[in-house]
Each structure stands twice: as structure tokens, then as C-alpha cells.
Image (cartoon, rainbow, N blue to C red):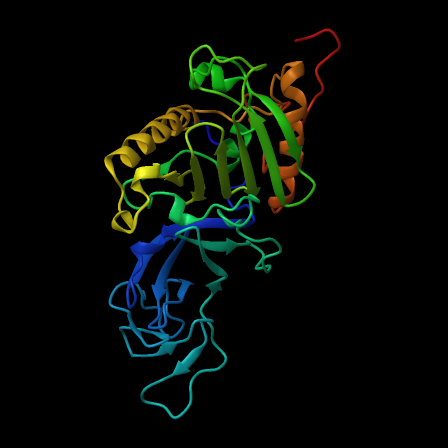
Length: 354
């Protein structure tokens, strides 16, 4: 991938782990947004995410740090830090150091995933992580689907992918035919970019011979900022997906993808609770295969700005790119592509052009 002119520090919610990866009492090391971090789960089950270094003398809390009740204990001198990153105990002093605080990140555990709010300026969250079950307006819940972790997930670390590429994929109607082999190009029924949480819905089918006129299936997507998206498919294979792209540094991101497959009627009894059957694995594999085809494109893509859009593409792409600007510290691209000095502008196709 050619280096993107887009900032790799957009504001929003970003997935840093799946919930089962961090057990009670565990300290998990990771690097995101060019910062070393630790995630840890307290005795009560609450997950917190900190910058990795103790504010005392700089020990890395992910290497020997331990959880004691609701606090994280530094391995170097035993200083204890609460879930807000404040020092609450120095074991050889009468009082804690109330003036020092480890940076902690607002953290939400939802959809079997752990999300952190990142804002380079330190601002507080102003929108929420969507709920896979409550926010689509139907009566489905997790019991209607096979458990996705670990059999229906993929994790691709350190790819040269920007989160915005995945969001743009959602308004790119033409790629469905050429990348995913759909029999017709989708028809978009909703483009709502009115706030930080956008909605994109479209009619689509995958079965051979299907037509747009006769299609009775589609996809609904909820996009919370650039790092968090959930989708619901209707009228076809019952599935919900959660793609998540989290910047690691100025060049790379970690890509996660979670797939919920609707249960077969004869696999809904209590004996199937918590069980991913062969049917579920097979169907999830089909969905994952489609997402991996996208990854192959994204990982070698150059951000084209301005893009050479056709008439049909113009409305969706320009609406999404204008929406995306709100999440960047500077409101857009951080620089231009030196090989294309016109980058940074969005232009309207000339009359009569395709």
C-alpha cells in the first residue's frame, strides 16, 4: 500500500481484543496508535486499558505487573493503580501519590469485544459502540446465533490498511460484482451520514441468476466512526458481522472480523448452547472468505484523492468522505501525495462523463 495521506490517529472507538482473550486477573500487552498499552481485567470482571508504563519510575506494567482485586500492581515497587489510572497505594508510604496518573482509555465491552475510545487530544466519547442485537430493531439475540469466538473470527495483524478504506467499501456498489461475484450490483436504499454514527443499507443477492428486480435480501450496516461497524444480513443466510480496523502505528493496522451465523432450527436446543456446529463453521467460512477477498485489495491499495468517480459512484463516496472528515484531528488528509499534487480535493465529475 502506498502511504496514506490520512491521519492514522482518527478519533473514535476501536477494537483492541475479543473479550475471552483477557481473563480475570490477566494483564494483556498491545500496541495501538504508536503507544504501548496494557489491558487488564479486575476481580469484578471490569476491563481497563492503560498506557503501559508506571508513572513512578517507568516500569512496563505488562511485564510482571499483576492484578490485585480492582487494582493493577507495578512489578517494580508495588505501586497500585486503580481503574482510572490513579495511584491508590505506595506500600512503603502512608499516602499514595495523588498527583500522578497513568493515562487510561474509556473502555467498553460489547459484542464480545473490547473497545477503547481514542482521541489524540484527550476528548471524552461523544457517541457509543453500537449493540449488535439492540440497534437493528428486530427481536433477535445471541441465542439465535452460533457463538463466533474463536471459530468464526479472523485476526490479521500489522497490515498496511487504513480504517477509512473499510468504510468506503460499504458505499462501493460496483465492487460487489467484481470482487464478490454477485449477479448484479446492489441498490442502496439508505445513505445516512447525519451524525458520527452513519447508516448504509442496500439490497443484494448472491445466488446465481438473481436479479435486482426480484431480490428479497439485503444488508443493513451501522458505522460508529471509522473503527467500528456492525452489519445485519436479511432475506438470505442469516448472519451478522463486525469488521474492525485499529491503527497500530503510522503505517499499519490490525484487522479483526467476527461473524455470527444464524442457528439451524434443529440446532437450537439447550444441548447446543455455546456450541459451534459444523454447519455454523462452514457458513462462517463462506462469509470470512468474502471479507478476505476485500483484505487482499485493501492491503495493496493507494488512497486516491480526488478519486476518478463515475456518476453513479459520486453521491455515496463524496458523502462518506465528507462524513469521515469529522474524525480527523485536522479535518482531513494530513498531506498530499507528491506524485499527484491535486490530492486533497474532491471534484465533481464533469457533465457527460462516466
